[in-house]
Image: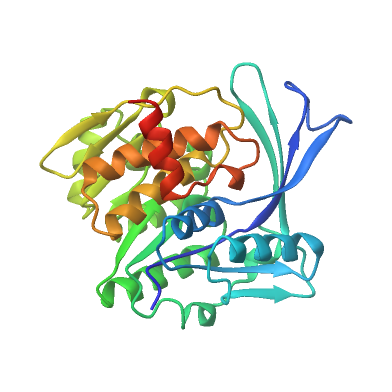
Length: 311
């Protein structure tokens, strides 16, 4: 039995070393770092002591081997990650600007992770308590169908579904995209939006009305991430705000995934929402202070020490 399962991209990330460095010109990069939103999520879940499994595909290459070995070393069940010899492991290049903006070039939709089959879920979702969907993984009709099918299987077995939409207006411009994401929202128990993502998803500018719409669709908990402005929690009865921890930002990539994984994992372990939100904020703050997306994941004792040092 696996407590937490996710699926999608595991990728090798390369980071520009100079701020304002264009991805279209020659420059210096650091990497490969292990990354991918669902991979970071499940790595964080495993570090917090839950049994956690990743469903994906990698190529028969050095990137793929590095990623599988890293996840396994951190306690993730990698038995549902298939090696596709004819494909290449997904990758990403990122650069940062003075104003905090980022540019990415992703090779995901054409990577090995696009070839996940429904059979790969069969063993790991038995008795699954939480199935997590990362919006970054919904890059094709095939991946959306996998998310729907697996969510239904997990919920039929008594499990819950978490969803980090990572949605942008450009995403919803694709034909049928809004309908597909709204359909997934109706299957969601824990929603993890960032900034204006929920507003964009439900097409409502007012935050409180957007929350009401999500709850009406069946969402039971919302942990709304707002970066340095902290996070808000909604459950249909209470609204709470949790301030962020002040840290020096080094690399924001993956911070939201560490936040979401910490909140969801602790809630799955029976921790109260208030405490789970405090730990989630600590996980997000810890993540931005480290270079490399997956380098920001933390163990429970590390988060305890982080919080204690700032009391």
